[in-house]
Length: 77
Image (cartoon, rainbow, N blue to C red):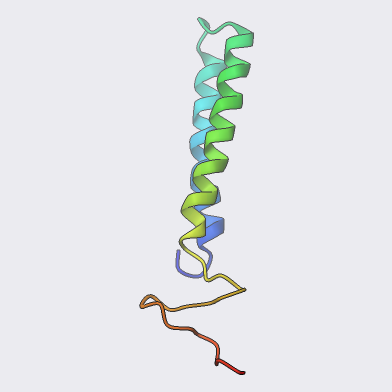
């Protein structure tokens, strides 16, 4: 997970989204409109979770810092 955290996080959330979609498809009690609305909400929430979870796993390019908050690039003035 340390080398490709964004790919791993996306794969985990995609599997959860696929499981929910399969549940909606196989459950005969769901109205098609309700199922479509539910999947829209699941996909939107999945994207928010991916963004927030993955954001903490990568080093920002603009202002890279270590875990203690020290700059990783030299300060050139």
